[in-house]
Amino acid sequence: MTPKPFTHRDAVPYRPLDWTGEYPPTYPKGAVPEHVAIVMDGNGRWANRQGLTRVEGHRAGEAALLDVVAGAIQAGVKHLSVYAFSTENWSRSPDEVRFLMGFNREVLHRRRDQLNEWGVRIRWSGRKPRLWGSVIKELQHAERLTEGNSTLTLTMCVNYGGRVEIVDAMRRIGDDIAAGRLKPSAVTEKLIRKNLYQPDMPDVDLFVRSSGEQRTSNFLLWESAYAEMVFLDTLWPDFRRTHLWDAIGLYLSRDRRFGGAVDAPTA
Ligand code: IPE
Ligand code: IPE
Ligand code: MG
Image (cartoon, rainbow, N blue to C red; front, side):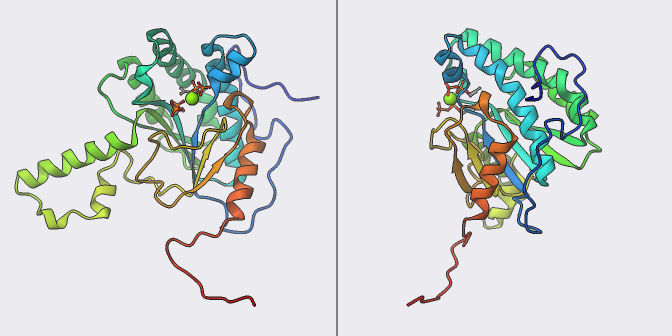
C-alpha cells in the first residue's frame, strides 16, 4: 500500500523521515551534492490538466516539498534551497498572488514543528519590500525556532530574485565605498558573495527544476555559476523523494571540471 502523503488537513503530522519505507541508494563517500537548489515548478499545469484551478496545484505541492525535504535528509544533503515565490511572480493575478502569500505563511506555520523535529534549520532568502508582513513574521519565527538545528538547512526563497539579490549586495557595497570605508579595488567575488542574502550558503552543486522547463527563471544566479543542471519532466505536485534521488544519480554521472581540463587521449 502506498503510504498516505501529507495533506494540508494533517494538523500535527509527526512522521519519521522514512515513513514511505523508501531509502536512497548508498552514495560514495563525499559524493552527495552539499547544496541542492530546486525550482518547484508545474503546479498550475498539474491542476489545470485535471480540471482544477491553479491554486489547487499549489496546495498539492506542499506534500511534495515535505517528501523531498525528508528524502534530502536521507540522502545526506546539507543545504536545500527551494524557490517558493519569485520577484517576478507578482505579475500573476491578484487572486493567485494573494493565495500564494497566505499559503506560504500557512505552510510554514503548519510544518515548522515537523521540520524542527527532523533537525531542519529553516532560513529565508528574499527581499522585504512588497512581501507580506505576516509572511515575514512566520519566516522569522521559523528561523528562530530552528536556529539550533544542523541536519539540513532549508532555505525558503520567498520574494527572491537572483538579480535583485546582486543589486542589493551592490547597494550595500556602494554605501561602504561612498562612505570611504571601502576602496573599489577591494570589491572581489568573495566580498560580493559575503553581501548576498545568505552569506554562509555554499554554492549550489545541483540545480533541479521540475515540470520540463529548462531555464533558471532568476533563481540563485550567483550561487549557481557552476551548478550541474538537471531538468525533470515531473510536475511539482507529483515530485517525490525518489525524483530527487534520480536527480542526484544524474549529478553523480557528470564530470565537474570547473574550467579545468585533463589531457587523456583514448586512441
Ligand atoms: C510553481 O508552479 C509555483 C510557483 C511559481 C509559485 P507554477 O505556478 O509556476 O505552475 P505552472 O508552471 O504554471 O504550471
Ligand atoms: C519560477 O517558476 C518561480 C518559482 C517556482 C517560485 P515560474 O513558473 O514563475 O517561472 P517561469 O515564468 O516559467 O519562467
Ligand atoms: Mg511555472
